[in-house]
Image (cartoon, rainbow, N blue to C red; front, side):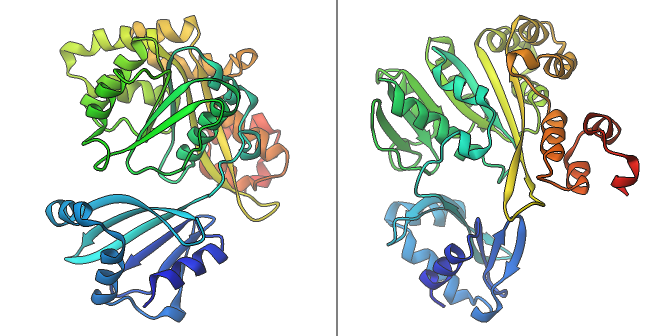
Length: 358
């Protein structure tokens, strides 16, 4: 079984992901749907071994043998990049691969609100892009970084695991550091990045207390810092960050976060009904004085109301975003109902007759 042929098939079908599991045919994901490539037959143990061995270098092989998991990226002969995770399941080798577009899309082409472009021009602070796995966080961040790269003279340092989009320095100078190859972990990369004269820092993910603390410190010291979290709303993002810290440090981190956080962009992808493909629904929280006071005073539960009434500042709730998408006919009522936070309010927002939801 040839990995190159499987990758070519996935590219041809415009798949987003590829799964290789021993005992099953290769699987691709197209617009959230999983499709088995039965013509390839079942993946055997030796097939999976050969696929993984062909992609790993010596250091990655050592890491994989030790940890039973390894993240890396590869570039195919046609220049298309893949983010890869090799792992074990039921004692057998397995692969998860995500296709990364060779060109970095423009913010507008992604269907993101204009306020997202403004985040590229902030002088300092922390901007978080959040959402579930596969919601397009990395693509959104890449489009913001490319906006800076095209229009500003900045020194940008990215710390990624692994490197996904391959940036070419334009008006800005961009350095990309990969975990395991260029630095041992996010926290170490961040500590050293502060000594490398950056203006903008991209942290692939705030995974743990050490990385979170280093990220917030970088934003406190006057840098513009971007990162991601696997959270589904702005208020839950704030709660997640605070909860990472021990109880005796949470008052301090509330103050630090209130002072440094500039915006949270929370996104989820919805399946379009008007054409093939996906469309993002976006919640946007801009940190005005009301939001900062809520964070500082442990009144995070009030943030959703501030978001809903902050449209003049570019804020919008997830349900407001879904309502706008539905009103344009881009998604079905069923899809809106499945993804919204409050079905009753969604009906009111979109002026949808209750019969349409049946």
